[in-house]
Length: 105
Image 1 (cartoon, rainbow, N blue to C red):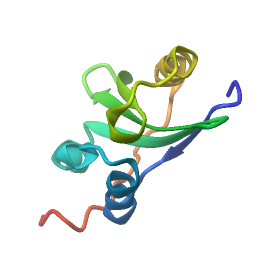
Image 2 (tube, rainbow, N blue to C red):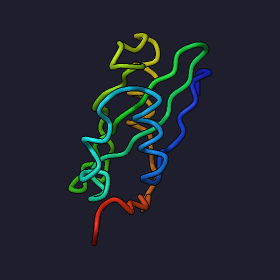
Image 3 (spheres, one colour):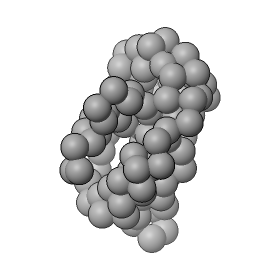
């Protein structure tokens, strides 16, 4: 999509690796991810590397752009933010399962 790639982070091991690599607080969303209310993606565009956070609105069955940050919460390029916002509006993935072994059922 416009030379940007989005890769879903779908388990706790990947989430912990993302937090360590990007040096930001994505782990603070672990409960919302477990509750299927929040989804995270690795984002790449040329030299930019970021983490995209989307909220899932179960009432309206839609994803909502929340944030896109680079390493240590650095600002993302405006172009990538616009592409990520479009991505969130058209995302139709249903029943994504987050395998979260960090939270006891």
